[in-house]
Length: 311
Image (cartoon, rainbow, N blue to C red; front, side, top):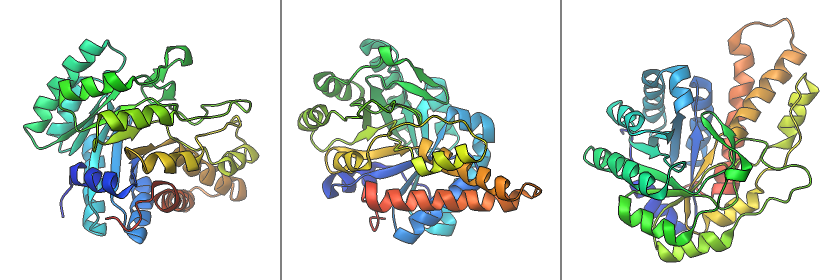
């Protein structure tokens, strides 16, 4: 089996009332943990690479690791560029063999966002690659994405319908209350997703796949482990998983998961070194980190996304 696009995945997810997990990857252990969980529960997967991950790990290395995951698992797997911020970056990923790209021109005006997105769509579709775009601005910081809370804005449903029609994209990331990064809400803030916006988008764009970015739930037990072992991470409230599950039963077909993975990976390594300060073999401390990825991804696939058994 080769890498696939998300087209068929999203069609099934929309009709089945579940979402596909899009997991950001940076190294071999993260890919192995994610794919082990997907294989155990027979779930389709999107493995996505940010611009920062491309710089860190080299796109060729990451692509070959993902191709190895396809061979080993037999699962339908999409290789997706997360938050491509220019036509040139998206073109590079397409030429490198990615089967899906995201062009994020949401920082520009509606007209400029449409122009850039259409340019990517034309290049991608001619090569059998699908395109995700974004409308609205999510607050938060994650890799190269940095939007101040005062500049964040919800997606306008009418503009979303106009944008899809004008660009020919295959899926759309909208802003309904999520935000990038692990620490999106203070202890006195109640997180809330705008399901009214999501419902209206679904009516205006029937059977069209919607994407949620910035949907980390922040596993507080993992944050506690980090802080007990020399860390100084603030306590925070993430998006409640029951809200994400509800969104997955509506128009949302793809939910991005990144910060949850980072926190799980780091907490496992910190805990290992606290208990084994003299050890220096990477295989020893990366093994529990890989297991932590496996555990949280398996939980998400079964209990949040609802895509177990859908491969």
